[in-house]
Image: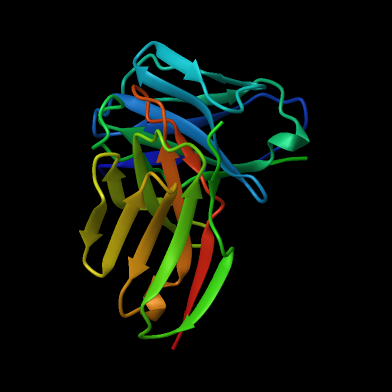
Length: 115
Length: 113
C-alpha cells in the first residue's frame, strides 16, 4: 500500500537493550522525520533527514541513532534503551523541506515501552 | 526558541455549534503553520497548511487563519459534528530548509450529540 508505514506498532523491551524502529514511505519524499510524543511535552523532533545519507539532529537526539541508506527507509535505533525513552514514536515525511507549501505526512506510530 | 501554545487543553461543545481553536507562537518569523487532527491511538492527519505569506486557508468546514504580527493562528470549525471529536494540534515551522515543526500540546475536542 502507498503511504508511510512503521513497524513494529507495539514493542516492549528491557532497559539496556538495543531496539530499532522502522519507517518506510512509498512516495519517494526527500525529507523524513522522527518525533516522540509524551504527555506533558507534546511532539518533539528527534532527528530528520533531507535525503539519503544526510541526517541532522532535532530537539531531543540523545540516546538515538539514525541512518538513511535508501530514500524510502529511515530507521531509528535506541542503542541502549532507558525507561525515559518509553514513548510513542512517529515517523513523518515531506516531499520537500525547502518550500513552505509542502506538508508533513505522519505514520501510525510505534508505542514503545521500556521496562 | 519557538514555543507554541494551545489553549484550552480541552473543549466540549454541543453538536451543530461553530467553534474556534486557538494556537499562539512566540516567534513571528515562521515559515508555515500546520493544523493536524489526531484520533486516540492513531497518527496525525494533516488538515490545513498556511504559508507565512498567507492569511487563511479553507477546506470544507474548516478555516485556518494566521496573524504573524500577533503570533496567533485559529482553526474555525463550522457546524460541528460528533465525528469532529479528536485532538487538534498546531505546529509551526521556523527553519527554512528542513521544516522542523514545533508542536503545541493540542486541544482535545468533544462534540456532544
